[in-house]
Amino acid sequence: RKEVEQDPGPFNVPEGATVAFNCTYSNSASQSFFWYRQDCRKEPKLLMSVYSSGNEDGRFTAQLNRASQYISLLIRDSKLSDSATYLCVVNGEDSNYQLIWGAGTKLIIKP
Amino acid sequence: DTEVTQTPKHLVMGMTNKKSLKCEQHMGHRAMYWYKQKAKKPPELMFVYSYEKLSINESVPSRFSPECPNSSLLNLHLHALQPEDSALYLCASSSPPAFRDTQYFGPGTRLTVL
Image 1 (cartoon, helix red, strand yellow):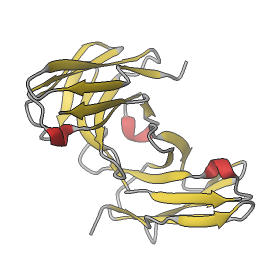
Image 2 (image 1 turned 90 degrees about the horizontal axis):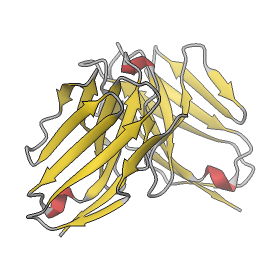
Image 3 (image 1 turned 180 degrees about the horizontal axis):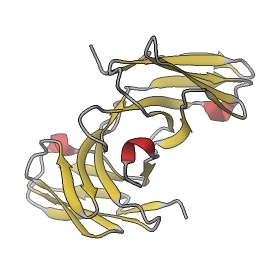
Image 4 (image 1 turned 45 degrees about the horizontal axis):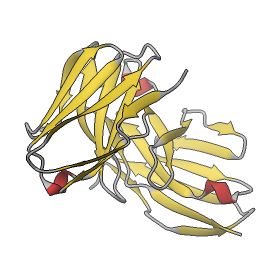
């Protein structure tokens, strides 16, 4: 079983729709969770850290479910500029510095 | 200034060449990273420096040699690379303990080995 699993997509979504991704992780001791966004041929950029209580930033909401070991990302009122690959990242168990990356979910917003 | 810079942006090299990738950050971060990313794959960790000391080497071949001259700079020396080493090489930095803090990425160096 992969340590961090994501649906690779692509998710083809009309502009203005709401879209949600889930990501499951295998290490129950993980403490830090992130969503990164990566545009084609660009570097990953942090979208959100994911806190136990859940957090919201404008149109983006992240949730953590420790019991089921998954995190989610909800995007409301999607924009064309939201088209990107969304990477789920979880801290690794062996080291304070190691992050375990999911393979990413590709999102395509269509006009 | 939340910026990590990398040079060069693009690099084409032959298998017998020696080249270096450079990374710089001025955020006061004490952890710096090299990642390798192939197309449609997530970044793969190569090396981690913490307080200018190499703390993680993810079994990277010796043709890749990292160096951290000071807390702001990170280099990756390349020698006798193979075509399969062609990839996007990303530098990142963070404040330790890193698992609680965001890693900030540079724009990457796109390396092609002929």
